[in-house]
Image (tube, rainbow, N blue to C red):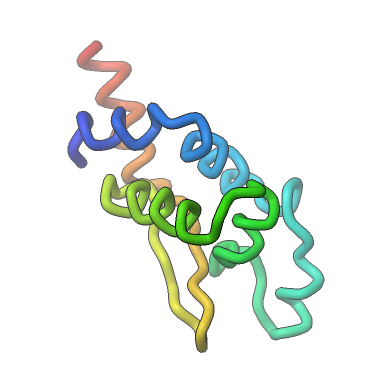
Length: 103
């Protein structure tokens, strides 16, 4: 975990909001379409759903998600032509411990 990379990734309001949405996806996204495909939020949230909620261009959303992934805050899983993102709770806990212990 690179604390500086995490700080930079979270410094953008939209990226921070994505992390908040992904903390409790059932509160922010409709899981019915996932269930119809035999999926659930345990695999993550589809980029398209995040893009719709954010109201940003798909390329911008994809770039923001990649920044969060590069910082270790997200993991992704590709299923068919769709990519699903979920929080990496291990790295988030490491970062929280770093802030608690080092700052």
